[in-house]
Length: 175
Image (cartoon, rainbow, N blue to C red; front, side, top):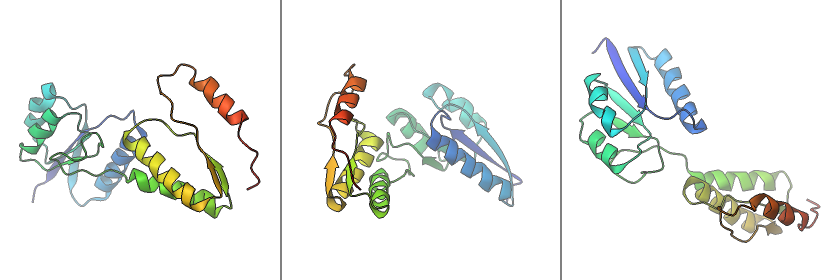
């Protein structure tokens, strides 16, 4: 058994999800029966050699590209991807079930007695799109009414005014 294990985290802390993952990993490492060196930093093709020269025992990464995925997959080092960007490529991936998150949100409101909902979704694909689909599908099944706006372009510069107009035209809810 080694005296010291090295963990490299190639994740961006600007996103809340990555900060929570790093917090969880560091909490685990503090309680682990071994000594750990934990190094955080960016991940890019230019940095792969210096990361490998550090000789990590494992890598946690928000994989940004197929090229990085392939380099890490072929490195022989245990790697886990925590990014939904390449969730179905070669690296083992751990991500939240965003559809279930949307479902849970709608169920929570329903359990709180809310039977008439209005929902302004993020009109994007990816994780927010999955949350939207989970929320909308569940809310449509559970509630008496669900008001959602027609799909509009996220590039629309009048988005704030569209939102205000939509809100003003909603019926008043009585739970």
